[in-house]
Structure formats: structure tokens, C-alpha cells
Length: 82
Image (cartoon, rainbow, N blue to C red; front, side):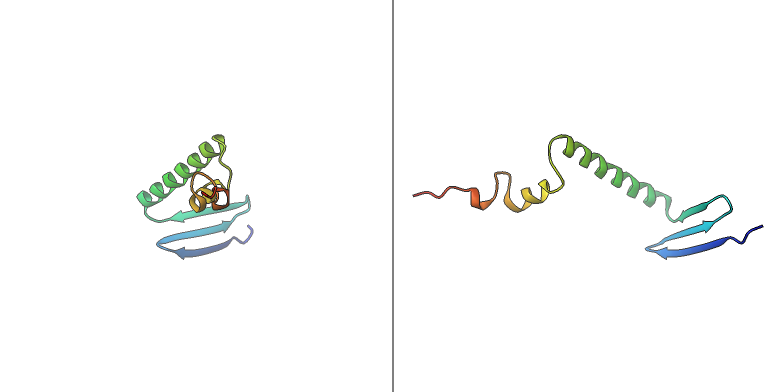
């Protein structure tokens, strides 16, 4: 039987373990199940939001531009009143 290698790390209340087996790898996460489910739901909601935004024509930098320059363009595009 081959020697198995295992690495563990604790991070913010979570324990992550990576174990090498003869067939491949086993990745294990230990922690609060409710917190894990809530985090997973939040990630899924964000992915769905990004998918819908892309379908509506907003690219990766669109939200940054809207936050910096507003919905109506950059300050350079504003017309000066005489």
C-alpha cells in the first residue's frame, strides 16, 4: 500500500484538509454547516447577478464606471453652459 500524504490548515474557524490517495485527492472542509450554506448561497446569488448583468449588456468594468462617473457618463462629456 502506498503512503498517503495529508495537509491540513485552519483558517477563520474552518479546517481544510487535502489528502492524497491511490485514486487521486480528497478535499475536506470542516466547520459550521449553517455558515457554510449561507456563504455558498451568497456566492451563488452573486454569480447569478453577474450573469444577468452581462446579459443586459454590462461588462466587467461597467459598474465601476457607473460608480465613478454616474449613470450619464464621465465629467468630460458634460457640456458647459455659456
